[in-house]
Image 1 (cartoon, rainbow, N blue to C red):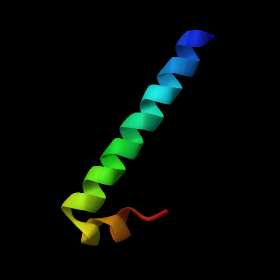
Image 2 (cartoon, helix red, strand yellow; image 1 turned 180 degrees about the horizontal axis):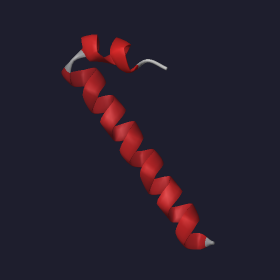
Image 3 (cartoon, one colour; image 1 turned 45 degrees about the vertical axis):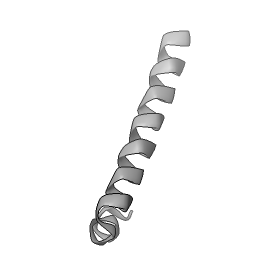
Image 4 (cartoon, rainbow, N blue to C red; image 1 turned 120 degrees about the horizontal axis):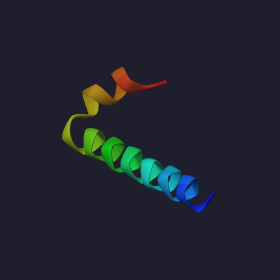
Length: 35
């Protein structure tokens, strides 16, 4: 469904934005979140 597709895209964007924010704010935390 379109809704599911849009929701997945929004979640991806949010994750990318949050990841970028963590990287810019504190690079030390980035290592902790590494998978």
